[in-house]
Amino acid sequence: MTQAHEAPQYIVVGEGDAPREIAILSRSAQASDHRPALVWLGGYRSDMTGTKAVELDRFAQQEGLACVRFDYSGHGASKGEFRDGTISRWLEESLAVLDDKAPESVILIGSSMGGWIALRLIEELRKRGKGPNVAGLVLIAPAPDFTAELIEPNLTEAEKASLTERGYFEEPSEYSPEPNIFTRDLMEDGRKNLVLKGVIDTGCPVHILQGMRDEDVPYQHALRLMEHLPADDVVLSLIRDGDHRLSRPQDIERMLSAVKSLVASGTARL
Image (cartoon, rainbow, N blue to C red; front, top):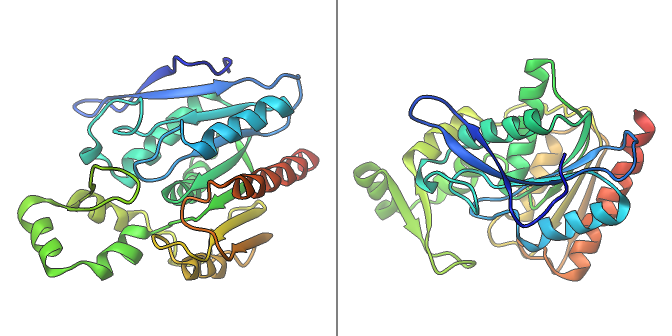
């Protein structure tokens, strides 16, 4: 891996009429050891320069750990149209980044939608029978199956009509002047990637951080996720005054503390 700097590296993912350039920022471990690399998986419409991602990279630098950040297509510095994005498409890009960087072991840190991507990554790596060992998961306000569980049941008649007639609908965003866009392709593809349908066996320790004032992903969703992780060592930290972003200094400290404990655990297991 190369040291992180302002200019990202680009890899091309996809073939035929669907190639897109994916931007990656990565740093190498400072020592020749086998501690897990940290891999950041961002949320819907977020990018690798957000507060949590940057603080994770700073922590990695201080600890001498490898760290990988990247933007999904249609996000941040990566190419491609956001409206073309689906869970399968962004999952394919996540796998390609891991293949390109080829770490021996990783800790996946998934924020919101990134938590869903992290769980699907583990499934796909297991199917392939190759790739890095996943030594731990840190899931921040995880939103697995959010299209089917959190969006579709709450669609208004106008939004349903827009999906049918235009192939998408818009809603105001609390975090951007641009509206959130949800496409019919995203909804249909989401049903192909559901994980809350049976036992999820990650084979690694899991730490979930969830705000109880999260208006985007209710904390009950994290409780439901725990029910699907009966075989794993799971720690759930409910933050009474935490919102969806969990980007306050005290929230960052919680995230980094969870990562640090999983690094120690993952290293011991190698």
